Length: 335
Image (tube, rainbow, N blue to C red; front, side, top):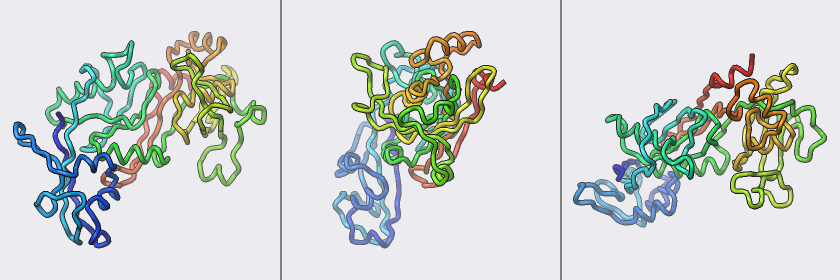
């Protein structure tokens, strides 16, 4: 079991005569989390408890508040991570009590799955906790995921409150992620010829810092577990923005910067394939010409890297921005 996490608050005047529940909802607690906090729970064998204290006394979510009240919230303990420990060094970009930001290498799956059960990023986090006495016990909540062969930044929450806030921010588009990718050809060449592919107006371009948009719904291919495709009749809304940073005419591929407005499975890979500009090295959505070229240059995975992320800290509320440059196997493509 993980250790209960403590959060403390001083109640401002605008929450006087309002319930503890109303105040905590404003702090990002979910209904399900508040339900678990409605009464105090003790674990005598571990001398641990979770619940809510108001001014040092155990309280209930329906209790009323006064200005200046001190609330102490002990979050419920969670079951430990179930992933098998994996002795693999983590590239930790940032870590505090509430969040963990990692730079994931290509070839490492996020979670255990059929065919990839033991050697996972989740397992590497378990091993990291086991080997580092300074690393507090926590259950990792992936706020987003990266495909097996996609490298780069990935954000995790270390407790249920941070996960609640960040998941809501992700759903409402307040977490911005940028990707760098190398694709076959140049998407600009097919502008005006493909449904849903447009150049942004100058006002939008300045607001978003992107020149092009792909608005093309994505659906799962029937009788296929992983494969997705653009389907304007049955697909879910999918919107991607991108810039062409460089075109290499001698090799006929482009370096793109992309941002997702939605988060569909394989979205970047599907959208670029739809434009007939698949990612270099993409064995699932590529074509014969691209595959031969990728093999010739020694590229063994799709050329996609989670380059930057910006978000508001779920507890401290400060603005945060991080970026990681291309790894060597992709940076060589710029030469």
